[in-house]
Amino acid sequence: MTFSADYLLDRIRLKRRLRIWQGIGILAICAALLALAARFDVFGHGDHIARLWVEGIIRDDVARDEMIAELKRDPKVKAVIVRINSPGGSVVGGEALYRNLRDLANEKPVVAVMGEVAASAGYMTALAADYIVAREGTITGSIGVLMQSANVKGLMEKIGVKPVIIKSAPLKAAPNPMEDLTPQSRKATEAVILDMFDMFQSMVMERRNLSKAEVSRLADGRIYTGRQAKNARLIDETGSEAAALAWLKREKKVPSTLEVIDAIYGEEDLWAGAQSAIAKSFFDKTLISKGLSLDGLISVWQPELK
Image (tube, rainbow, N blue to C red; front, side, top):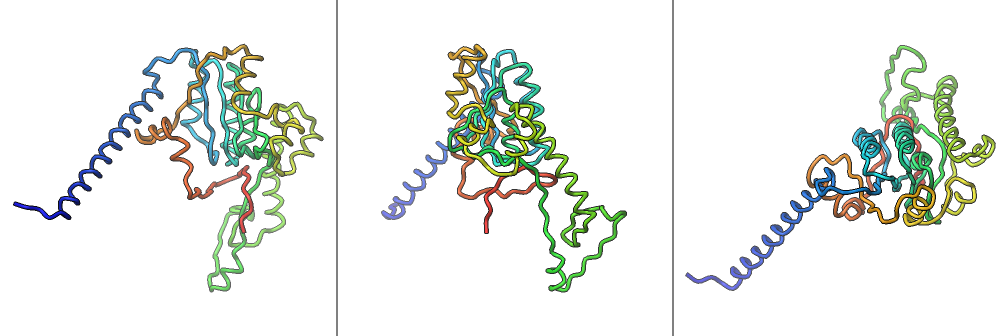
């Protein structure tokens, strides 16, 4: 039985593709096993510095909270570096991170290292640290709280849709896109926003040792570069993770010989664990940005898109 040259070439190509996919499968399994090993410390790490990543939109996260509590309990963790690269997120998410990291800092040194962006709830997270380091070009600040809505009542009328709203009291479900914002509703909503803003400002005053007047001047919602934040005393130093390690050695007597190990949390499957363990930045940084969808009060900086 003879085969044509084209048929033989197709068979060779098919076998080559199969070998490639077999290799990828083997690598994925190995990476997953390494991720599990790192997560459950099967290699028996000795004393070390833990690196906790806070990236993307900050939300309330039970798995992250449990990891912070685990870092606090683990006697082998001698210090924690919090790497922040986030435009912010929900107020509750930022508050939870702040409170849990402050609880951790009562037991072990915590230093924050800001990446490209650490604004709004991202900056709130950094406030929990004993020391804050940022790059000169880091975008930070944006101290404030907001609630976003829209009034589509006119649009609904143009397309022939008339909303029917029945509620127990005038302030129920306010603001509502289907009805005009009344002065009473605006006042009640502003009271909520200002209450959370007061909480945020209190954190800045306490952690950065600034007066209320100084914080009021800085907390007008604007963003700052790392250099500007340093001059405004919103951060302690401009630099990299090396600066954080130097501070830990200098001020907290943490040995410079200790290994820095990533703290992995919230992995739902083996492949997710593999991604975080061996190629976190490659897999997470895609060309298509993830949409921002948050309920409730948010503390987030995002460039205006028109």
